[in-house]
Image (tube, rainbow over all chains, first blue to last red; front, side, top):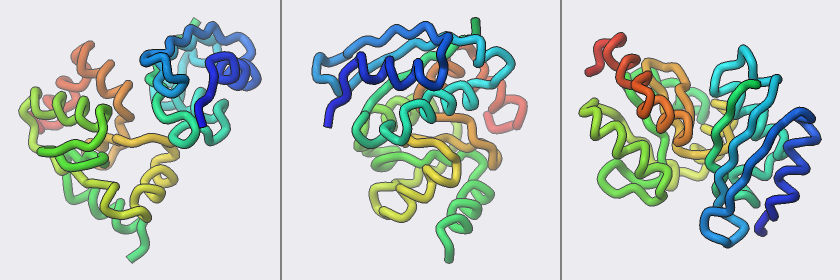
Amino acid sequence: MPLPINEIKKLIKESIPDATIEIKDLMGDNNHYSATVKSKLFNNLNKIEQHKLVYKSLKGKMGNELHALSLITEGK
Amino acid sequence: MEIKDKINNAINENDICLFMKGTPDSPQCGFSMAVTNILKHLNVKFKGINVLEDENLRQGIKEFSDWPTIPQLYIKGEFIGGCDIVKEMFENGELKKIFQDKNLI
């Protein structure tokens, strides 16, 4: 089942309140997105840990309802 | 053999081990293809393991790495990341440096 952009943003914000989030729907199908997420929580974390924080915020949807979310993370 | 042991064996026996959908010659997913292309471009020898052939492995590797997506790249037993991280590390030269530092290139 596709996941709309607003829903993805909401989930990320719940776990990472200071996140600045930009999401693009790459194919216009609510299923292939690219996201840039910036947060202070990422400072001093390596890329794997940063991406894991975002994946965890999506509560198991990544790789299931959400097929493709290409991710760029940065500290603030 | 337990799936955890299978994965441990695979990442210990292969310096560069890519868990992917499809095979290096015939990737079945754009993200797996992207990482395969990067590894081929850097001209390193790697083992591609097709998770589509084994549902236990497909789920098992996600739990093993605590990472929800495939592909997943391991270098010398260490989890490096998925497609986005590998791409980023390729573009900024970090990936090549790891291969050089570990004498894999």
